[in-house]
Length: 391
Ligand SMILES: Cc1cc2nc3c(=O)[nH]c(=O)nc-3n(C[C@H](O)[C@H](O)[C@H](O)COP(=O)(O)OP(=O)(O)OC[C@H]3O[C@@H](n4cnc5c(N)ncnc54)[C@H](O)[C@@H]3O)c2cc1C
Image (cartoon, rainbow, N blue to C red; front, side, top):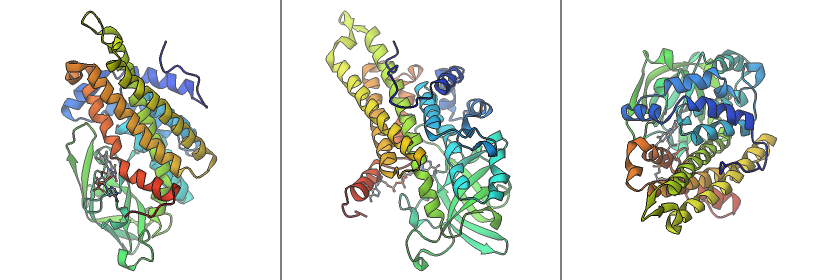
């Protein structure tokens, strides 16, 4: 019996899950290990997901996508991670386009979404974070100055993941100085930057090597010209547009964490049953059982919050608190499962061939990005519990 075969609390998208498991079977641990060693991009995996239409799951049918609900996208990413694969190479393509979908003009949607859905154009890069602003997005310095029918963009982004493997970037930049804005969140604007043209006209992308294989970069913008037609929504309202997409991002990342937790729990419990030391399975010792059992309970609790957040998102209800809590609980459950797994494997947990150390490195990220645990706790304290803002 699969320990995860429990009756679903809500729509579980069983067929999609099964199809993802089949697709992922073509990308076993050895595939990810060799890429990890070279810090190379999983191009074949992303190609297979794109060809099967999964990255266009959330794009509405009239624009060439399959118009599935967020819970289906969550199921896709959860199964990718449960299978030992890594959705970080392409997950943003699923949700970044939400800003274009919700706030773009009809002409922009017609121009870009069908090509993104067909895989002709990759929208994988999301340029928000800057080296000096960190989590305080309202302090970003990258500036887009209007010049006729263009904007001229100067500045620097950091941690712009997948920029080298994307044609387009959703770029947040200042269009009015912070001092002149009525509110700190005003004066920021959102652009669709065509990186294909910009690469020879002021855009420089430098990879950052990290502890896991993540294809992240720093990006320099030196007088990059962006057509005014690529401004999304109204000038000065970009911060709101970015915020409105963050709930979807948090729910989907939380789903990846659930998948990671399941992968670790499967591996740990199987190893604990099979590995014999002192003439009996190590899984007979409660010191081994309990951390795995506890991580399982944490994972199930976090999964309920992911379902709750996705269900609220799908009905259009406010889901800020649930999306944040899903991300927090999911990341913590994945980490608890990772800890229990590496401890259960003993020395073998550190051997690359078992994939445990790789997944361990990969899942640690989610307590920091795309939003760190502290900032989620601050959100709950302020917005749910009515305590004063701490920063
Ligand atoms: C591998 C990777 C990929 C990423 N991909 C992208 C991407 O594609 N696009 C993008 O725009 N960004 C991306 N990021 C950036 C990511 O969103 C940020 O790293 C994250 O939001 C934290 O910001 P920071 O690193 O600047 O930390 P800082 O803001 O400098 O914070 C450092 C620490 O201080 C804590 N802290 C800060 N302020 C407070 C406070 N008021 N109260 C309590 N604690 C506080 C934080 O919780 C954190 O632990 C990525 C980051 C990584 C590492």
